[in-house]
Length: 391
Ligand code: GLA
Image (cartoon, rainbow, N blue to C red):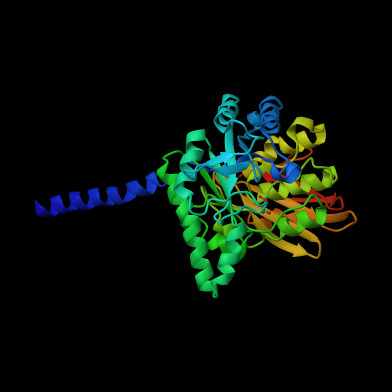
């Protein structure tokens, strides 16, 4: 009898252990966040009308239907603190709650930006010493996403005198805001921005981060985009649902790269399961940029529910092969030509562990290639062929 009872208790205990694991399923950022961020195009020249115009555009141009959700205000919205310490927006943002309501009315979500230091990178008010108060203010406004940028915490870390002490200061600061956000009970995506120092991919999740920047700032130039994107090789094992590597926001549509290069940018970010945060002016976008940002096949690679980041399989000089495993056993394959001249590239699917011919889609041309077991093509300079192999 006791045996049976004990077995029952053991089973109940096993269930009790299993439950928190289920409860820990990510409620935010189950797939990489998609949206828009003000910094790459507008920098600190941002105001509420511009933000509203981005929300209008996203809701009208097909981006919302393609999965884009967050309208993120980066640095430059902050005004002064009042005598009670509450942060107020500057006069370019007369009513943050009304702005959040407006963004929500479009079926979208609002993001905001601060720093764990006394000042942000552009010299505005940071959150140091006001973490709980700021988190409550953001929640009261209806904010759904916070980018928390190291900025002026850096000098205090350097002054700490050792790597260990500096890291302790940094982790404590990121944990403090994470706890403050959680205490609001509002689901708020928490985005760490400290430029990839200290192998943040190893600890970003443990301080509550849903994503963490792995690099310094992107620029709207092919060499910088390529340096950052291809530099992500080896980091795939650190990403999973709710916790993503962030190689910075998109530059698609800002004008510094040609459409071939922007397709490379978008393909690489999709293979990396990177956040897809458009960084252009959505209210004045050319059709090429919109087509690149809303290509459903590319987005479905980025947003694949398995949440496995892709990685580099081989590099022969400037010719790189990247693969991302997909839910159900399919694979996304990128053949990248980083050189300045067109190049012949080939892949035998056996090399990727695929036995036998598989249905294959050339994502950018939209062509279904029928069951094949290898592929070869001329890939343009700085270009890509992105394939989706069925299981
Ligand atoms: C840093 C970040 C950028 C942007 C600016 C704002 O440089 O890396 O993404 O947020 O600060 O000042």
